[in-house]
Length: 306
Image (cartoon, rainbow, N blue to C red; front, side):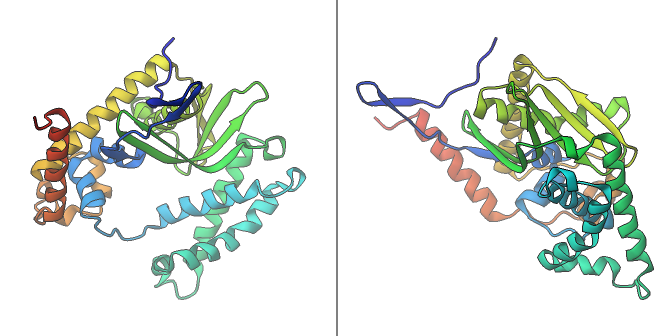
């Protein structure tokens, strides 16, 4: 069986070693890697140009429900009831507004509060559906909203895991909440991309391949489970490095091309996309300059001066 990579070490005195930090050539999260796979131009707008996107009720509801489910496990096991979770919805919304005041614009035209009330009710419905999938009184998660991070062959991989469950035997289950419906079979691979990313990072950092990757789809009370293996994660890691290589090449030239698909209908940047008749802004000069510096530094490492 393949084993996880280890950082380079150096002996400081007989019997002692010190781990040497790996040089970082790039950084990827599952969302940014997925952006590039979906549409390189989308990746550019979000990651390089850092263009703002208007808030949406669907995205805000997802954040809200995640917050409620995370806080649910702050309670003693016996108090993790659907009623308690429902009561947390409005409080979680107030806290979300405090941290992201722009979300208030979602209901700026809601003079009588009817839209907000219906929206909060829909969030409570999703929370109710969670309780159809499992009983939180019987669980004690090892971690919630856990930052997982590793540098593998110079590429930093990092992201936040909704929940980690670890059995007494040491088996790891990675859980992610989704507020949509379970995807059709043809789109399962896309749905599992994020989970394989987390599985790879956990394997590299803990030396254990997670036993189960589980997506919980709250809109229709469904689950999608998958059991990865080490060989598959090695192949997935190669895929991530290939994605980063393609990102670096595009950054070096400023050539991030659109990849039209049905997902374009939900894109915030249609007015800037040539595939939709828009005009793409000039590529940021500082991004090109940074890419040039990175290429020169890489050449210097493999072609030292004599």
